[in-house]
Image (cartoon, rainbow over all chains, first blue to last red):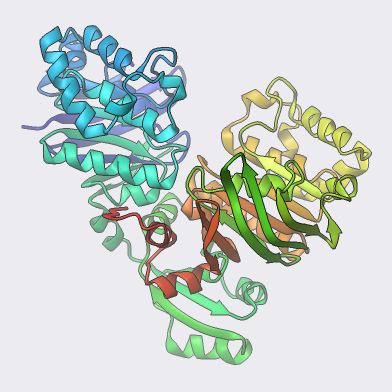
Length: 301
Length: 242
């Protein structure tokens, strides 16, 4: 059974089409990533899944319930972590957990048991009495995740959960997600970070409300037919100017210690040799494996 | 452009910055990397004259930062995505405000920055309220505001966190152009994708330098495929899945 099945979903805000014909399926114990730039429709998609937004066309089935008319059942069975920190800053860690437990009608005995598990999982127990407002960024996110898990949902929806969180806390947060997955929980997560996209089992790439790619990260990268080269020189800036006259500006990217060049076809060794003759300071030009960001940027064009 | 020797900042018994020695050249893009609490913000606040060092020396353009703070102030531009713009002012009013703060005549400054406004697609939105602008525009507007007085040294605090990869690449294109014009760019970030654009980076932990060099060299030296991996490796974060 699919945990989540979306078919031909379209969402409009007045005349603006925020999502257009989106299809996706999430299986049990899967991390599914929603990837896209600002305004791609990521939050709209997540809110539709949570039954917080009406949609005009298509269908959404969450844990076997139709989102069009079974919102109550769905809401009781999913956990949602919105983009903005939405806990009560003037309640303690413990009080926030209790509040969410009551909201989801978890009885007291079950709440205590679940809270124990979540404390172990998040390592927040030493901070149980601390006000949420006084937690660090990474700890706030762990608390928000714990609150979304208090009623033991089968599916959790996370909207850019690591936005603005420092890199070490980001790693910890993803370790928690992998642990949840191992426990059989399905996760739908949106992110602007491409390294996080690479950690998902499946991803959908959204651009202006449309799907421009779908599959496992490895499939998406191997399905891309272009080539990516890394060029180095003692004078990168000059090399960049040299390349500008020989390639499209949008195919070039200047980094701190290399230049990336996209090419539809493989660069012949003759061509590289001729560049080296014309620009002797060109030290190397080697093909490199593209990352998610490289592929995503090309697919957007 | 920037020289520090034995730079230390102590808050009570806590050493936030511990013996940092740096030489940063004109036209260089230099990145400060570290987790929260690593000391990068404290270092940058000292470099920008907002905090006094406990000991050690900072010279900007051969001027001592403590003795010549007024002079140095005019050489610095500072952009932070978070706080620097007034949401209830129009874009152009924010620029006017910054010209005022830096005490430069507004019209000539705007004229000088026209090509940049054009390149950033900002010319047509100058009369829009800042709060109505998308994130990417606000971020580019903050950069223009930081350049009103044509400073030779520009500090960027997480300049492109939260903007999409396309907008990020365009933004860095402009930063590269500025560096090419001889401006020194100091970037503080915990967003490893930004580190790739720097000519050199320093990675800090507990106030100390744990790595310093250009991204390619550092990656080779530590056998890491990317900056994220390198970062976690030098910080000794184990079981790193990212």
